[in-house]
Image (tube, rainbow, N blue to C red; front, side):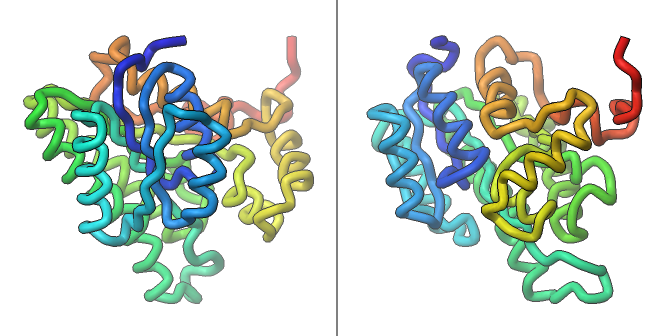
Length: 264
């Protein structure tokens, strides 16, 4: 359980859900982790639950200066930045494309896409100087196929997949790997809101997810976090410019299992 021993990592959007689970797994694997979010109270609670290897840094990924300060904090505090996880995101506007509010759309794109661009930009600034690094971007199965999420969320996640591929082709020459993870639906406040209309109705959301799952169970953030550990570790040295789908064989064409398939 020391696959990330001696490494320093940043995880944005880490005050709850998947980001918090990634941070906990990284620390369990030996990394020192800076968790970042606009929710300072949530950050404090997560850091206390994880333990001494976890530090906090309030960060708004909509602000490039805030992201730059976050990266500098990691470098100055730990002497290096080995892993950058660009995970911050929101659901954004929902409903018909004819009703999308452009200001709300721009806000979602700024958090998802521009925040990821800023994260790659400033993490790679430090990683190029030190001669190595890993950047992981949270995409979604909605970023690979239409109809799985709200329109703007879907567009932003598609863009993150393309950005990952593009950045990887440049940064590979500096010994920096850039990959994306595309989680399927898993039990978080964001997914609960999509399924039930409420952020906190986990019981109803879990029931719906189990009914739709070919494996007959609902994934939780902890079930997704292991993919980040693998891609962040040295054993994934040859994985670059990839998008790893973690969806229980449900949502992506070519990887779609029927819920009606009879088990043998």
